[in-house]
Image (cartoon, rainbow, N blue to C red; front, side, top):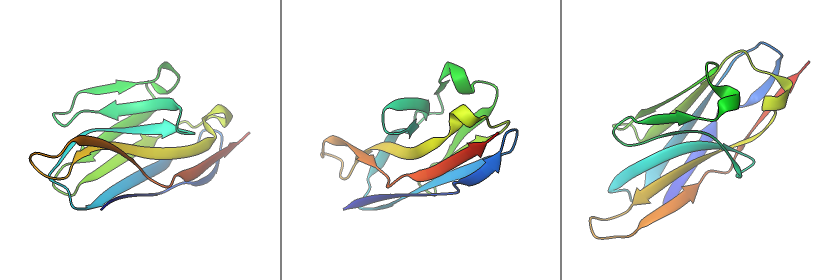
Length: 117
């Protein structure tokens, strides 16, 4: 079984910062692409296993995605937060549990980010 656990959400005022973390655990052979979504439908940022990165236009220059492959972890540094960034942020990862297993998508439970004006 694979689990993704997010942490780091909270409430801040406009212009504040938060750092989200996501830790993967369980039976994992390889983690491919990892990503952050807002409300499970809006892609915020993704990072491939070799470090290729892409951001939603709305967060470019303010958010930074990174990962630590050794620790099976994903991060999102969120700076200059705006009220429109408010939402539940979900970690997503494509994981292969064994060398011959299929590549499956997994989601964390979500962490709330609230930005007040």
